[in-house]
Amino acid sequence: MYFFNHMMRGLSFYIRA
Image (cartoon, rainbow, N blue to C red; front, side, top):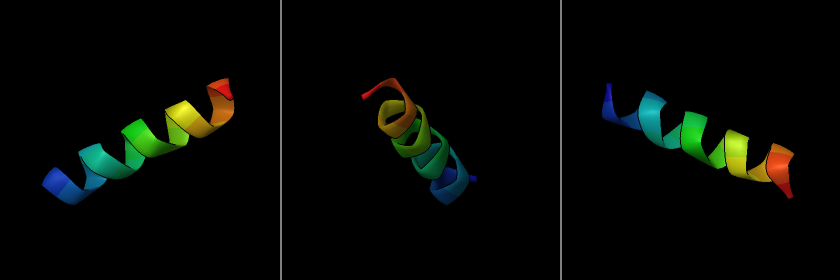
């Protein structure tokens, strides 16, 4: 589940921005 983890991290960063 590497892709999922990467996507989750990207999404979290986008929301924080």
